[in-house]
Image (tube, rainbow, N blue to C red; front, side):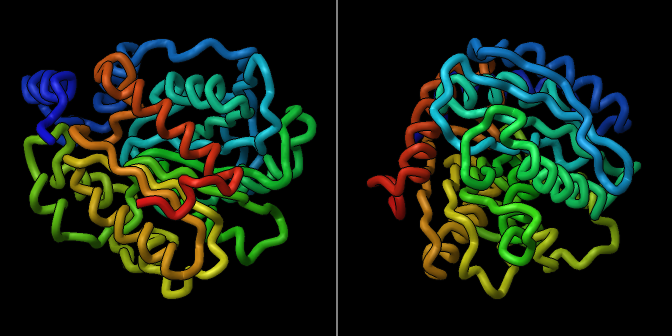
Length: 314
């Protein structure tokens, strides 16, 4: 289908100025923080609190969201997008509030270390440490169980997929399911939608490649801790809701990963949202049509966790 009207307005607005990859990194971070203020405040939740989570390298900030009424779901550890280099708690705050209010589950929004000051594997190390911490402390947060959930958008979806795969070989945490929103699961993918929507659809492939160069300079992009879709063994990976956008350069890589997981016997719900661009659920008020899609995402998420009819849907 054509680009949705709100999406086209966003693209037109974004084309008026330089992309985040064309300006100094500190300026890019400030610009994204300013933009995040226009995403809206999200839904009403019961409470929020900012905490410090201990890691082997120090501490990392996180924001905990409690729903007004709990559904008993395990806590969701959420990783924001931003090319592993920009973004933070404010970037995904509105979406985390929506996920909390609409799912009834506790959400923990992680402010992991950013490149280029802290390149790979710093963000992965923070993500794994936070998953272990949340597994140990879920009861203290009055979260449900068993296990934990992981999720994220774009670069954050990459981290969520990495943590989900890692859960198969650790006794420090158990991931019950993963929510991958426009996730960067294959950093070496250079075909299909990556070529078709390379420019003019909100985020360009040149921007993606810039962020990858900051996050993983001189790294083997086929390493599964950088590209989860490159893993040769996917059996036993936690259940997944894979959300893609029709006009996203990362669409095909995400959908290929969903099909590979399904072929390995993993419960998968694949949800392509037509007329949308990369990271649309995060953009809040900038794309009014995106809010309806968040409802659909939460419905599919809860169905996946319940083993309902959306599991293994196309």
